[in-house]
Length: 63
Image 1 (cartoon, rainbow, N blue to C red):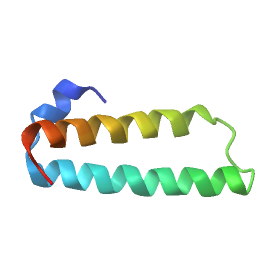
Image 2 (image 1 turned 45 degrees about the vertical axis):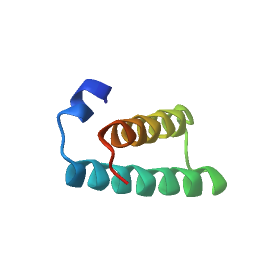
Image 3 (image 1 turned 90 degrees about the vertical axis):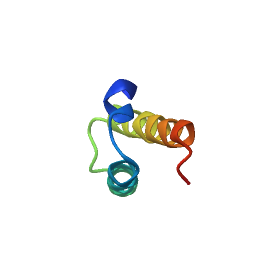
C-alpha cells in the first residue's frame, strides 16, 4: 500500500483500514507465538502500513 493511495481516502475509510491492519497485526503476533507463521516479514509490512495510515490521518487532521 502506498501513501498516495491512502491520501485519496476519506477519514472513515482510513479508520476502517487502520482497524483492519491492527486486527491483522494481532493475528500475526498470535501466529508467531504459536509458531505457525512461516513468513515473518509480513509483520514488518503490516507495521509499516499502520504507520503510513496513521501518518496520513495526522496530515489530514483526523483523530
